[in-house]
Length: 240
Image 1 (spheres, rainbow, N blue to C red):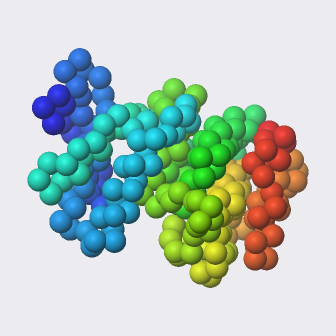
Image 2 (tube, helix red, strand yellow):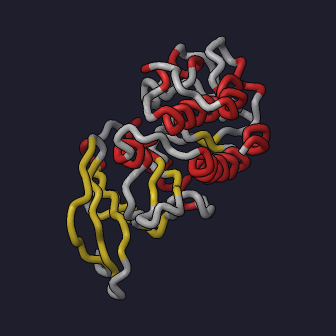
């Protein structure tokens, strides 16, 4: 922390604390601080894997990793500070006023670009939800964040089997313990898209869906096992 100093705490979760920090030039960053001694061996390995994954990502629509180091039992991860909250908060601030179609398309394109990038690099996010899409204060930029459950796929291990993620946003094959790949992220994207259209989570109802999105969502949200596996992000991008 010699080149940074803490400004204030931004939040705290089950895996650590997040602080707003500044460097010697006054530039703001977010510091994720994790006490590794509180984690099981398996969780420590997953946490360290997140750092490795983040350090190799370089995309305009993904929160950038700046640096990381260990200090005592603490793992410190410095990332760009995104100052406009997250997509969950944006939806809540609508207070029931539907988001315009052009705006939804704009947000969706940012998410698709981030997903396409990690999928091209054989990485699945596994926890795609509105909370993990961060927004700039201007509202013009959206970033994929929180790679704590992300996993690389290889030729030797092309599928994951761990049941993880957030219920209500996970694909059926994940919840049921079937093997899955990056297409599970597409299912989660469809749920986010639905929520942007209706301001409600998918499982709370299906009224008021715009006809253009009705063409896309069935492809993403097939609930019969693995039916959504055939849809590609490039197909969705065509509609947007």
